[in-house]
Image (tube, rainbow, N blue to C red; front, side, top):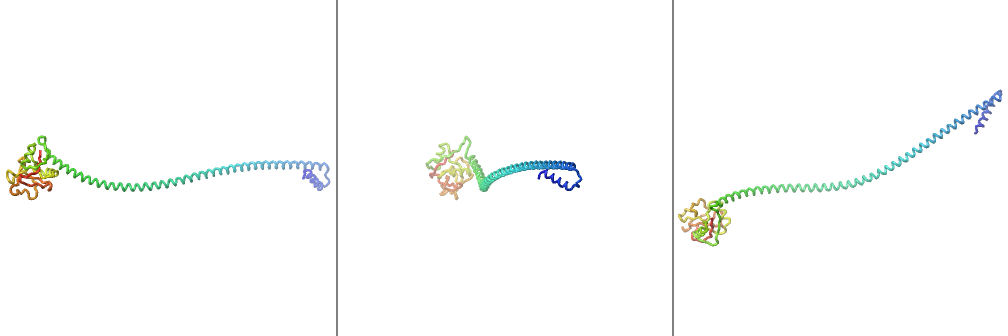
Length: 279
């Protein structure tokens, strides 16, 4: 509906309601006034519509900005989610590798633990063997000391000073006791004198044949003397000897096949035996 139509309708209603007493000029004034009011309403309506349009435009712009921001945020979320998925996949791969390494390390640890137990058992065995060997070594050391003591004692007995060095020698031929002594004396020696147990054991340990020693009772029966004219202090006789069988056994032999400590026997001095000289 046009604004003029509105004015005409208003004029008709005013004309019908007037008392007929108002003048033509008064009607014109009212129409002018109504026209002015209609113009103000139109301006207000136009302004309101403009404001509404501006607000709608601002709302549309803000909505578009919000939508764009949400799209960017969603895109960012998607990118972040993809990165997180990639990170998760990498972590899962790393976790799988770490679990594999863990299992390998556990297997290695178990193997090393087994080897450790075996080594500890071996160490215990070796320690026990070491103790046994140490005991044997101590025993051997004790025996060594005893043998060294005997050797020193024997050496002291056998080794003379420079004026009387000791050595032994045996010729291959057999002789009587007097011939044997003369053989030794011709070479600056004499028949061997055995006046200690150590010397008796030493000589008996290496001779293999029956030999004359420098002991006899030719001067007086039963009075045994060495070739250096010293009396016998200790004898190493066979059981039942000396017995001076037939009253003619005055010279002494050593029989190595008998026990090393008791192997002396008296014989007739004319019998042939090996010679054992001491120098």
